[in-house]
Image (cartoon, rainbow, N blue to C red; front, top):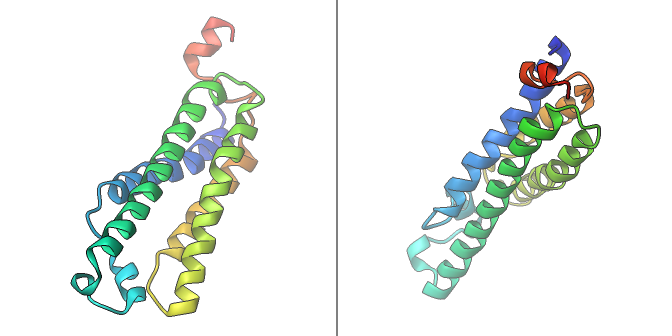
Length: 152
């Protein structure tokens, strides 16, 4: 593996791992995040139980989406990209770009509209890292040592 592809894999793997972690956190959350509470402007306990249930449901769904994207990216990195399949880079882009870019957009929109301290800057860094990784990845060069010996 070349240095370029090592950097590419790292730049894609870090957002994939973060997606899995964020997914688990949001999927298992029993109430909204502190920045969501900032936006609400009322105490969590002051919200009607149905509203709290709905908001937690939205968070859990958000989490499941991020978890799925992280797992899909990890699989695409570990199997087809490492085996040199030319389509893998495009699949990685198609899976990661919509969710990572929407996360930046939505978090930034919420922060700028309300002043809440959302994690939009971190999301922007992850999106940038992901795009650099996809741009640098050369699927013909990302063969694992095992694949090179197998003739794949």
